[in-house]
Amino acid sequence: MPRHILKADDFDQSLLEALFKQADWIRTAFHDNSGGRDYLRRKYARKLLHYVFGEPSTRTRLSFCSAALHFGMTVEGTDNIEFSSRKKGESWEAMGRVLSGYQPDVIVSRMMKAGDVDKFATYSRCWVVNGGDGDNEHPTQMLVDLYTIRREFSRLNGLHIGVGGDLYRGRTVHSLVKKMMEVEGVTFSFFSPPNLRLPDPIKTMLNNKGIRYTEHTEITPEAISLVDVFYHTRAQDEREGGNMAEPLVIGREQLSWMKEEAILMHPLPIGPGREITVEAENQGCITNLAERDPVFRRVRCFEQSDNGLWVRMALLQYLLDGGLQKMEALEQGE
Ligand code: NCD
Image (tube, rainbow, N blue to C red; front, top):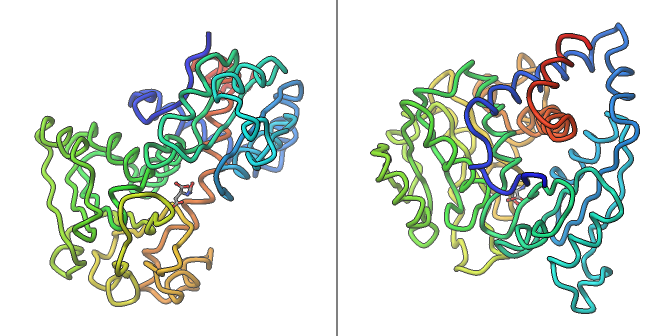
């Protein structure tokens, strides 16, 4: 039976390193002029990806679909649970069993409630990848985020990670913090309104590991000047647990307080409360860093979302090849 990808803990550090290396390899092959893109396009021509999304998505769904299509896979699915048999009362368990019977190789799924993707995966006979379950976890966004940090700093260890916004309900935050806390020498600073602090069970995990962290309710020059990465997030006000009264805004001024080599990340989308200013967002969209106002060269949110394609291609390859060994063979040109 397949081992599904449901949480950050499903990746150990060596698997992460292998996936990041493979993502770099795929990125290079895709852009080379000697047929790499065509090679990738034929790689999994007989494979099928299904997606079942019960919650809005742009990046996760379309980067997985694009990843599959660039590998020549066929893609089919629904992003409208309202028009699925769920409406007639079908359980997630039964739905997962039914869809896997149509012989997809991978199903990517996102659900409104924590734990529902696990239920969907219970009887599935193919790989199920959690594309985000409620306020719980978003393991493939964690891959994107760590891959981005790894590319920017050429390492994960010894970094000071600032995490801002809705730390209570932000599933990308939960997966990121859970995985980064395993990395040697990591330190965290958390920035959130008092009612949206990091959940206690995750703080307990940090305490048990003896990881240093501080909590802040404002973004001050002193606090933000310490971080290597500031990972910001939007208010998840569509979920239960209280509203975000005032977003903690990052713009020109806050960026200027950051270290020269520090970066600003965000899983996107930026929320209606605008935790990143329009100016910073627009500057961040400019791909060529040299064309940006220097203070905005720290903004890496869009490079981060670009990375989603390569790392999800690497993950699909890992799942479809059934392990790391074959992946390495591909890298060696087989
Ligand atoms: C995030 C999500 O859906 O959890 N988006 C994403 O997948 N990149 C973040 C969010 O919705 O705030």
